[in-house]
Amino acid sequence: MVGGRTMEWAARANHLGGLPRKMVITAVGAFAKAVANVLNTTTVHNGDTLLHLVRSRPAGVPLLTVSNHMSTLDDPVMWGFKGFPISDAKLARWVLAAEDICFKNTALSYFFRLGKCIPITRGGGIYQEHMNEALDRLSDGAWLHTFPEGKVCQEDAPIRRLKWGTASLIARAPVTPIVLPIVHHGFEKVMPENYACGRRPPVPLWNREIKIVVGEPMEFNLPELREMALSQSRGSSSSTGRWPRNILGGLDDAAQRCMYMTISDQIRTALENLRSFSRSYMKTKQ
Image (cartoon, rainbow, N blue to C red; front, side, top):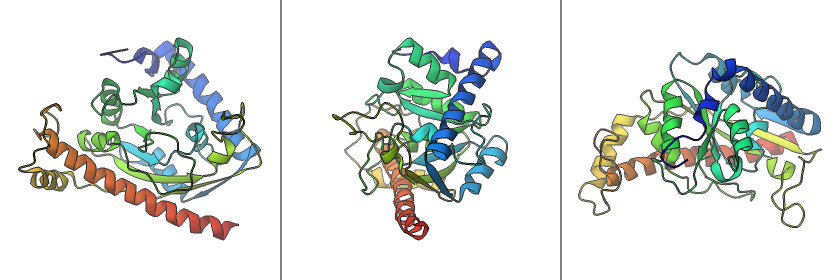
């Protein structure tokens, strides 16, 4: 929906008394638990940190989890490990989801909206309307998950350059979110992109090992980053005037780019360090 929010009414907690959301979250949670713990073996490192932040972070403080993107099953199955309250609709994450995959028709749109998914148009820019919706959820103190790489990558390779959407949410949120990096492996074997004739398998594969490594919360000194962005962009010729200046206290688009790039680089470094750790962690568990 151009200029609006696709089926936002279905994403409201009070839609039909909240019953459709509870039904979808419970059903998807059961599916995630089955794939993670019955069909496959899932090992989690530092899961207590994630559990604590989901259940007991300070009131009004949003949580923003970020991870690599190995398959179309990453979310919700990465939350299906033992002990995680994936069937609790109130605790369930919001997640940015590709519009061209999850919102292709009315039925899918309704289902994913009930599942607390926010449609994102690839190439639509960091100030598209649904990014404002994601910002609203952070303003509510909710938990939001993003895949800042922007698309699935099943290669065992370094974390790619991140899109700036996640950084913009961190910078723009009224209360700076707790940012928690997560790296996982194994989903590329549960749902390979090129399984048969260049297609994914019709159902998740089994007898695979999934490894999830949860990092430590990241801190961002936004006033300091803002001053750094102003200094780095001063005299820059890259400002085009196409981005709104009422963002981030009047920063022009050159300064906004500098700030988003710095935040994204810090997140990418944290994810890459976690990926390196996870490789050694997996070897010790073999």
